[in-house]
Length: 226
Image 1 (cartoon, rainbow, N blue to C red):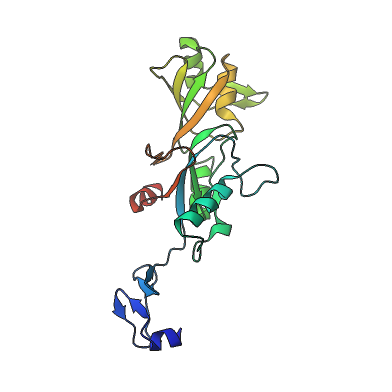
Image 2: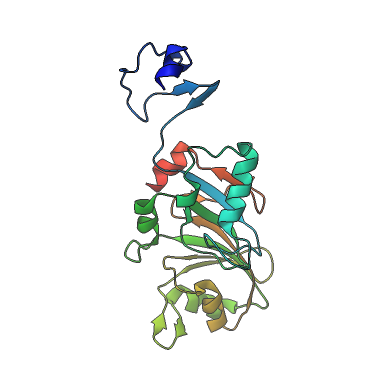
């Protein structure tokens, strides 16, 4: 580093660094080197529109994972240079089934993940659901009151709205039980044939993101989540 400084190759906020004793505040200043600028971020946040056929895991012996998908896109974006991106520490916040699509948050921010997933927080998650038949007004009423999805498992009341398309619904739940949405609709006599997560807490899926695409969260999106 001293050699780079001596050659005048290090910049802070566009100003050439004259000596190695200079101190900088991480997160507040931009460091320039080799024609690129770098900033310090302890955490990274990515929004994925998860496609079908990809498992929500950091590794899997037989199937492609959401982390594999993230690495592929980051390598394309940064031309294979992932220096400074804590890829090995990134994980999905919660999970979506292999055949479920939609919003998935990927980050290395453990405290935020705990906040979003804690059963005590009751973070709302909104889904688009298509079923093989109508659940009817009685079925919707039961979903909104809470249904039994297991021997000793009752769900909390959900918000349910009918969509314009036949046998299609919007449902918002505040829990994260195993296969919960599918089991809830099964409890009222319908099979889920398509499931898409639209939002989680304050974060909504970017409509411009096609299935399989990923982008970083904006500062506002991160602030709203935190």
